[in-house]
Length: 618
Image (cartoon, rainbow, N blue to C red; front, side, top):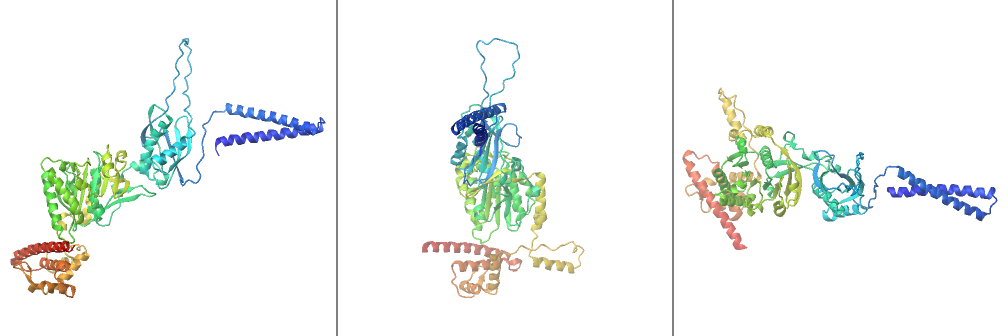
């Protein structure tokens, strides 16, 4: 019930009391004292009641005029609305600096023009009090609700409005499903819509205050505070890195990237200078090295400007750090060759290429075309062969990020930027121009966009991360000493039995990582055909002798199979494993190497023949 209904009810109660009392008094006096008839008594009672009503109304008006006028408050809400929570935001100037700035329009102070013939007097005049702000229009609440629903597609309604001498105040009802990103983007423009509707002219810089309790972000400073690296949770899953935390729900959610997911194989970071993309790129790379073993994960860094990756050269995962354009071209060409060779393998090593300031490579004077060709090939082919590409650039346009790369990048991270038109058009990212910086990012993975805070990585935190990686995986030299556990134990026992002076200093080597199901299968197949291979394999010619292929396949499967297709490929994998683990002596090393190369060439030819056979069958 609003204030207008309360006033009407109050007047009705006063009128009823006066009317009833006067009527009873006149009726009693007329009947007992004056000796009037019943009709005359009722006429006098009605006259007295009318006089009482008039006196009551005059007294009520005098009481209202003697008090200070107050703003009317509307408490009406639409019944049946699904909106359950209320959010306050006001347009005001006296607020803290952590709140979101915004430019809107406010009513100008009206000035009184001096009279033409007014006499000049020296009597000091009291200061003129500015007039009260114009009252809100009756249908303004409906206009704001209609604007929020139709124009911005938000489940928000205006439940109350207050017009005070200092600011306009609106009480909004916000649906639980709305996210902080959409609310912030709309509230920046809502003030302009309101004042354009009110047809006010003079622009005044004010602030926009908003709170969203149901998002557990009661103050804007909670969003602007960067996450500290020392409080970062450790990710134990292999090939997974933690970017930060997102508040798009009732609780903070981790933002992760999994290198093994084909939809997250390649990542692009876009941000202007000072937006934090290099810090985030370092944090992502350190997270991968912390969670993944160096025996199956290799990292290659390219940075021709700041040389920020030099501190990672001693880490066991890092294979090369390119500082010049020539080194960058060499390492990218080398990776393209490795990806081409890995197409013949079933389980190659995972390789990650990290490029910062990628526009310096694609804008190179002499090798720009070659860089673009290689990067497009890696982005297109490497995704299927355990290769990952991360690149960061200031300019996401087609000149710096070719279309062939854009089509194969499924994860896009955008930081603070002045012009987000290209991101909106080609990557479907909305609101990048409104980010605050200081680790504030938007991530688009597939069709889902989220806003998150990254971890702040200063020099002390980076050294802390490097130390943690070294303690878990060792240094680059120590990784080269990884041998199978049974071999390490036997060698340690031999040294201990010889009673050498330095035997006590030698420690047991860490066990090798567990084999994958495919590696275990190949090892088992090699054990099955090992008794037949000395007679079945020709070291001079580098291949299986004629007629022995069917026998080897039968030994692997336990039944007769044709020497073609996947049966022949599985047999060749077992033969290659047997060749790599034979102790044939130093004099046969060159022969075995030549045989392995010939076997690889024959293996590739067999795969090509299988592909051509399938194509002809189709």
